[in-house]
Length: 223
Image (cartoon, rainbow, N blue to C red):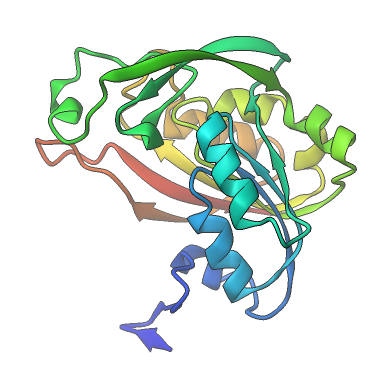
């Protein structure tokens, strides 16, 4: 079904993906920042998952994912990703979907007026690279790499050199006005992926701040 020539999915699959992935053909998915699992579930219903690796650093969210996918072959890795392994502090925010390895820019009041960015607790999380994680789990090829990592997209990509060579599409949350200190800008993500053979295939609007400025969106890249 199409509405105004916009691909539509009753499963909630993003229209950007409906344009490039054929329904009913199972895919290999790497979901970094899997959160509550809704994204992975929508793709499981739309396409089916041949292989899936869900990456989530928050312990409570990772446990939730294990419960949701308990009767499947989906792998859940409780870790953060970056460009080098180790352990780092992570602020868990009251709006925990925005929790990040990076500190929030508290001077951006227009964002804070829309979502609760106050810190609920600070925890230490293990950190690895996507290349190391995929080697450890024998995950060799991805139809889709999805990134929702609150400003650390570039660091994750820098730790994914090998897997990017075996990935068809990258769907990444991107920032046009980063509200994390040290967070990546859309143009940095676009440039990095362009150098590795990816083209920008589409953009969708995401979050606007209290002034109406577009702060975030989702960008789809493919070869």
